[in-house]
Image 1 (cartoon, rainbow, N blue to C red):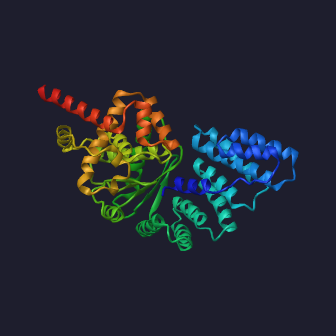
Image 2 (cartoon, one colour):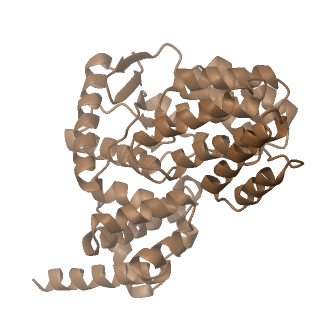
Image 3 (tube, rainbow, N blue to C red):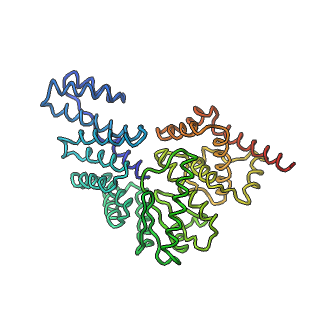
Length: 418
């Protein structure tokens, strides 16, 4: 589970409102339960003035403030939302320093702002307060992993798994982290304002190659920012492997030339032509931008499609695949292409990428940047891709794929006649 979704799952399931108090508190509970947080906050504050010594009222007020902090981060835009969220989270924590939930809320706000060491400190306090809670150990492990402290991450994840062996995804995460820790042992690092690159010193002219990748990513950041109207706001971690180590990390997915899984992972490009390097690096950077814009809720077909279009990736056999899809009408439904393409059978991967390219190109060519940002906002809220596309583009996913294929086939026919 991605880092952000993991913490949200814990927070949503925590922080219950308490009952047993006067009318203002009861009204606050009703508003809170229907998601009307501003009204709930007002009621709890009124309840506090009438019963200032009620621990129940104070706890409910703190819980409401914590919920507002979470929603400010989830629903807000711009960096100002973090100041608002941190203020509410800090107010919630005051007087309830013995409650791990409020430390986790503050940790979440700091994490989303990119203040990772401070976030880890908050999560550590939460773990100290509830050392036998599986989810809290897992959250701190996630932050340690993000900061590339693999030993602490593995220790915490393994403890979490022991406390709750039903966590199948965590078991996979532990396996991947062990592999990554072994592969990245002895790596060196290079950092600027926007990217932090870990690189294998065994690569030929490793430092020079890391600097080249850094320059390419900075260029990609500017170009993608112009098209999508957004640049990543946090330092993006990048790992530059030798070819052998990259293949070892990818395991069965040897067809992949790069990966974004919270980090941009790239193989050694020393022997590749510059254009290839730039396309692949830009492709993976687009994933980082889309991840941030949609709060990790983007369907794979849109994520991979935008990455291809912006990186100008249209492979030699793509036209043949598109031609076959247009003539047969046997496209894979986009609803079946919402999960990572790494989960697809290899026989379907090429088709999935072609469909993703055509559908995303159609949206970019026929609609405005504002339409796309509304789509990102809807996905970030948790709307389903089909509902979001229907509301914004007035067609469902099947219509979108059909229209994209028909247009491509028509354009290709015109081009052939020329």
